[in-house]
Amino acid sequence: MAFEKYIPTEKKVKQPMARIRPSGLISLDGDSVEKFAVKEATHAVLFFDKPRKILGVQLMNNGAEEGALMISKRRNSMTIKAPDFFFAFNLVIDKPMVFPVSQHRDGKLLLDLKSVKRRRGRRPKTS
Image 1 (cartoon, rainbow, N blue to C red):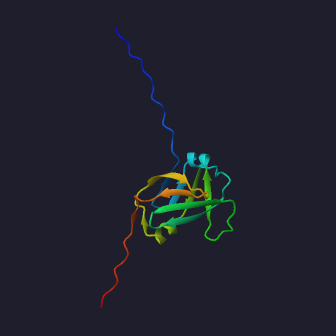
Image 2 (image 1 turned 180 degrees about the vertical axis):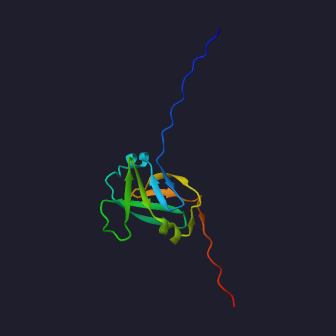
Image 3 (image 1 turned 135 degrees about the horizontal axis):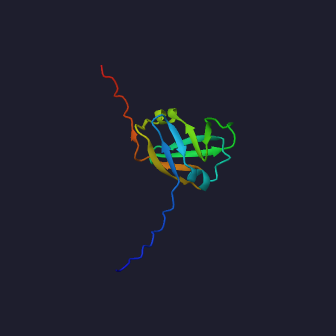
């Protein structure tokens, strides 16, 4: 009887991810919180690059900045409730979606939203 040796494959390194729900809730997973050392953040300001469809999240320790949204923390993840952000930029999140998280050199966390559809605007009325 010939035995064949099993050698496990290397485990993949988990990439930090964010989940966006139809309600406008943005959740950063534990890997994002750990990798980008954002545990002490209490508020966030959201930015959007329209041509590239990239969401930028600037985390901060106080809510004094105009447009700052409060961060909720659960266990090791963080959530930001921002339904108005998606409405303002006509972004349609009709089911929970997952996006990889990266960090810009200025410290913003970046989410590439290219797979998110844009809501079409209304046609002007003709008389």
